[in-house]
Image (cartoon, rainbow, N blue to C red):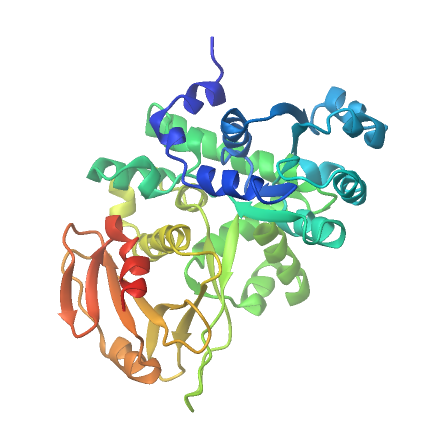
Length: 404
């Protein structure tokens, strides 16, 4: 009987994982490719799918497996036996001393498609690789499923928003199983994954902090307020935030700075990256509860943010604009420096309306294009260069920008 990951590798959703083509292109040009992302997002399954598409022999090492880890007791000798293979190294952050050696091995026989390195702690992986593999490695980040990958029927939109995009959560037979899987994921992340990175924070303390951040989802980060509530100092709160960000559980969006003379908000906004994890921490376990919950608007905003980030090129910057006088735009996208930005406003309404605060901000930054992302079906103009855009058509942000 197939296990879960083998089964979903045959699932049409897995076959549509958008990153597969990009990884294959990078393997054709670089000796090493890094695939980073949260645990259980499908990195291993995707790596094995990529391997099947390579014209190369493949060897797979899981550094959480003691037998595979033991094979690298003498890594130089072991890897030298597989110079003509694609070597997939999973959970590479478990053996940081491997990275300097990989440089030696790569330089001994410089050719593309030698190593595919998987990891779930981005700063460690990137720092170690950047110190040792500069010019030899290309990075890709795998998020959980996106709306584009699961397809558009409205039931899919509601389902992925409620459950989030982690494959086991999204593909669960019912909401109860999905909720239980997410609870287990949270506990495992706190009790095993984070300690496994050498980070010593009591699981109950970090769970409480994580929940408090969930209540602040989509709001300005206020370290002092959270620190006071927990009885810790603001530096400790900052450290906890960094731990969750570094392990792909949340992200910070920085403010957009322009040459306006307005008094700008300087604190970042904080979002939990997966809407399903957000809902579990807030005990929102059905779509009916979500619809009546105070978090519905900010949850939708964070969900849309993840779809936008998955659709746009990774080199594009995303920020937000807010002044102390109340002018505000949810997200400001900067494709390249010295180019007028793109403004994105998020509305959870089938008849989106723009506020005075939006128009004030619009006049401040004068965006090249503006999109109002909403849960409807049709795209239509609201004003000159301002379009209502269904979440299902989020890729038009890139298309319209390229055509103007």
